[in-house]
Image 1: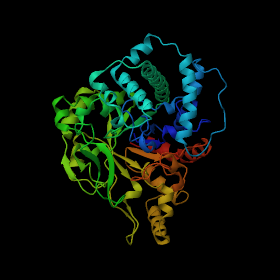
Image 2: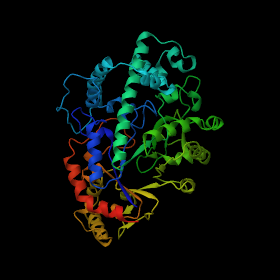
Image 3: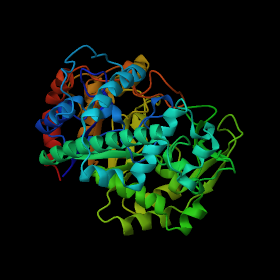
Image 4: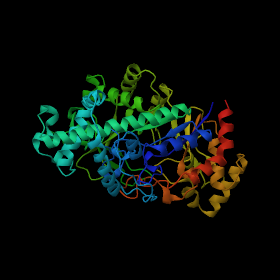
Length: 487
């Protein structure tokens, strides 16, 4: 059976609090998906966003962002008794700084009303929860600066595990409470999705950020100098996104060390992700084969070397240690054949973005990359133009040729964007994923991220209501249901 999914970040759900959360809007969204034959909800990383509000530079690879905790759900627990706002912040953009400040005030009120029990104490006693709580407490005490700028005693706390001051201990406990409530609410969302026969596809970045508990608490997993600064960083060389490449700044893994301890870091990380998601999308999958290693001293990503990674050994270990693991691979871009061989060795679904593979500049439009069954076919992702934006940027001649070609493919319903969506939905790919922005035929004003840039307006787009996306999904419903009936 072929399956259809929609890509929508949790942050993009409509709420009166300026950002999406794990309360009733998430349940309503699941209902809308189920009513229209959608069986996959793909999301972006849920981890606490770091530099530039990017979910791909989080403070932790396990913790959830407290921004997504539903105040209404806390009120149902009896932790909030004051009347919550029911309107007033339905902006189509997330103002992260303002929303965080407003929400933190409510979360602290909930914590004041919270009575710890044995279940909470067991949760808070987990090593990763304790480390994360201490990390966030020290980060707050240091003006939210990167841990590399903290006093030495705090930089080295993972090694000495010294006693905390009362203030730091109180904040660490508060952070544990936030994670406790986040996980409780997320599990409720996932269980509700399962009751509607919907699977959730989570997104796991290949790398972790330098300003993260992952690096602070386990420096020997990364290539760092004696002070903790990266000696080499991750990114990609120059490509069609950037003439100077993308210098992400993430520290590079010390693969020799990781291999010696059985890739425990990866087993724990992916094993935990499997508890949260039904399908795990590995972002930048190609780095399991080869990764771009940039000297930290270089200001761009132009200088670097492709280094081979022990991908087979890592994946063999993950499948051995984590029963039922369901991975998919983000394998876009210029790849050497060995990446595809690695992907196919484990029968992983790769990705194809339809707008990337259509050649509209030739005399006749053609698809550069045939669609295969074991594939996730997208109209677009969070990293590229919306389908409407891509089409609008074509020349008049290109648009005319494309419409003619789409008609030849049997895509005749509606305007050109609707026909492109029809092309994806009628494909032989086992999974077809549509970003919500493409479902709604929105322009590039709704684009989620521009690779190579940092900060606003990246990661800010959100729905103000479900009305438009629900109506658009209803129009697509016959195609979605027909797709589900095909073998």
